[in-house]
Each structure stands twice: as structure tokens, then as C-alpha cells.
Image 1 (cartoon, one colour):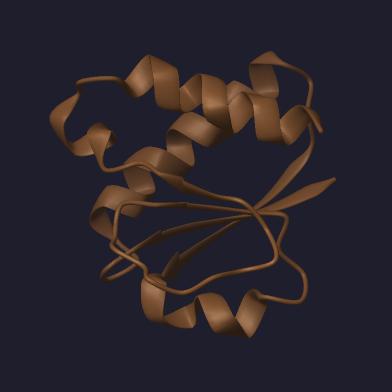
Image 2 (cartoon, helix red, strand yellow):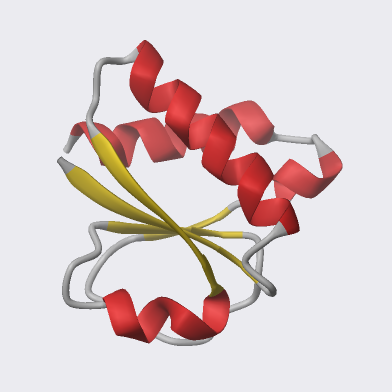
Length: 92
């Protein structure tokens, strides 16, 4: 099972949209995920257990797991490409 952090600035609005999309993507591909919907400032607390960070917020920090920029979920442009990136990481 993959632990996926889904983060935005406040951990509420945009992360909910992304969280729901990842949940559906995982279900459609029979991949078990443990989704953690958090504020971007909380990522460090999960750094030891996370496999992936998907975020709509800006982050300059380096982590030992992949970070996928999901800001396009806000515009709707390029969402399918981002979903493909997420799925690729979930399958690893």
C-alpha cells in the first residue's frame, strides 16, 4: 500500500479535489492507497512514511519521495497528464 500525501495551503479546498481524483484513480486501477489530506506545512511530519506527495501548493523543500505538482487541478488544463504521472508513481 502506498502512502500518498495530498497537500494544499490549508488542507481543505483544493486538496479535497485532488484527494478525490487520486482515490478514484487508485480504485479504477486496483491500487491500495493510504491518502493523507494535509496542509503543505505538515508534510515534514509524514516524511518518514510517505511514498508520494501530490500538492497544489508551492514547495521548495526536497523530500526522499516524488513530488507531483497538481496545480493544474485548479485550472482544469493538463489534468489527465498529471493523473498519468500519479498513476505511474502508484504502480511503482
